[in-house]
Length: 149
Image (cartoon, one colour):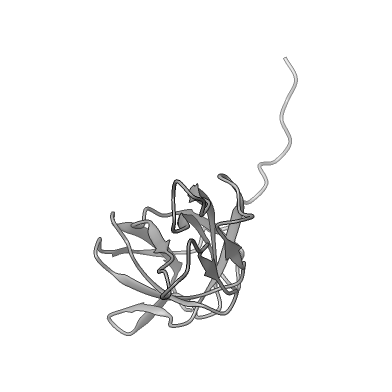
């Protein structure tokens, strides 16, 4: 049998503190993807930026500027049959600003429906890229922070 060389010293693993962001936590976002019920499609990518950091006990868990990734889940184009356009989208991944680590999130969907002005026959809904959104986590999010940060 062959002999093994001396064992390589393993790097010590950093100590990690675990946190849990509770369900019901609000996240303030700014949309980066413009949406329009006349042109958006189901499964279109949607991006937003976190405007306020998520903190717990004085520890920053998710920094301001982190990116949320999502998808359009429902589109209804305005027409004679459906006088007002409708868009529904949701976010399912958050990307940490500094580490670019990804975490799966569950948040309540965001819904927009057009409103008709007087004498309008139909109208699509348009959501500009700088729209501010408030979403709410629908399940807890586990966050692991290296000690010493």
